[in-house]
Image (tube, rainbow, N blue to C red):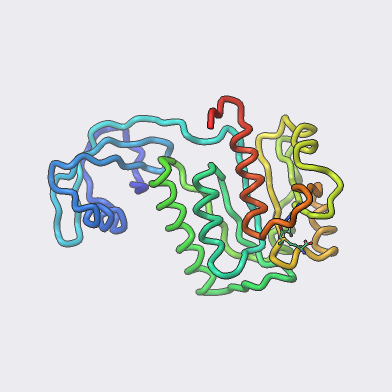
Length: 245
Ligand code: SAM
């Protein structure tokens, strides 16, 4: 669990409630070793000191910087798929090393969220990302953006930095992913924009192009709204030099 501390001094602390629950579910006892992460790219070796009804105190013993992150920064901006499929996107994107996930609503989106429902979902997805990070040994949790419309997200993007490439996933695009990636190999940040079940409208694709997005196709099959962005992330992640997956 992220601890919210970056101190390098070993110390004692009470775990945040969700981490404390996890320790209780695992039936750890005083003296049990455990590994914690603090959200800053480090892991802590720790030991359970005391277990109360809801409080778990631990002794932080050693902090170790670990490198399990991708070198590149990859943002998946996707029109949210319906039927809880977004949970799977957040989970898999975390495992694959994604840096940020931006849930969007586009013209043809089935799933529409606003107000408190949208905030609850954002918090829920953050929980999914934390659980996935724990499971796969990531020490950084991907940022989960607030649900918003594609139009407002595009409007906020601002000028495209030279180090950033912007890809619009479109089944009818002429350019295949591999060719585009090779042509823009210097980029350190990739923004991947993907549509909903019914696809993006021509006007939305045009608006994305106006913000520097280049249309790219992923082959002759139509991938589901949750599969397409994950396929791109997986391809980029496993193509990183030094990845021996
Ligand atoms: N009938 C829709 C269309 O033609 O756009 C299909 C939408 S698809 C289920 C959901 C999204 O995944 C698309 O909007 C696109 O962003 C992405 N996608 C799916 N298959 C793709 C492919 N072969 N190439 C590029 N993008 C794809």
